[in-house]
Length: 197
Image 1 (cartoon, rainbow, N blue to C red):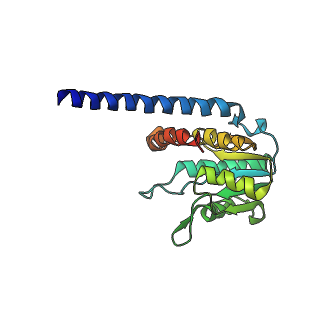
Image 2 (image 1 turned 135 degrees about the vertical axis):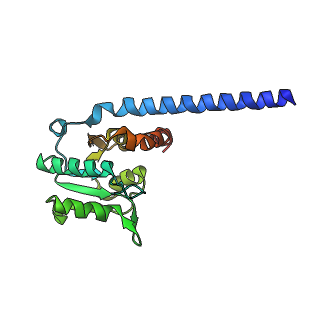
Image 3 (image 1 turned 60 degrees about the vertical axis):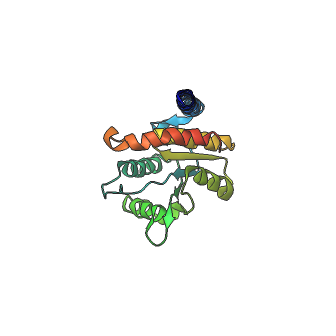
């Protein structure tokens, strides 16, 4: 019996080491591939027709304002001000009966002075890979500036470049670690999955 449990423990230990190793390699690979295409300053970006803002909720589950959302909105407004994009594709989760990220974002853009004529709604961008696939399929463009936080842009730009889209990431402002550590933890696994997508 002791030998059996010893084998189980050894198997679990090896499995944990393999998972951690894979996470580390996948995350480093995506970082390496994407790092030359991410910018914190819009002046270093090329001019493109489309910007693609990746969806996130306006509020966290407990009703607290989402800083990720606020910073992404500001980043898009900055790209318009600097004439880096002429249209923005607003992607995200769309649930007609309860909440729509594209519609919510559009209302916020309107308040910031961005008219509907410059906004394109993508109701089927409930995952990053879906937002990229929708762009590839619907807009027949080979270039785009993706707007999200740096950790997210790494994965999004990787996925886009994998599909031969000349994608750049404009990094929206960071948020406090106290409100982002859960998102950052999930991103470790999201990058690992992205390698297979």
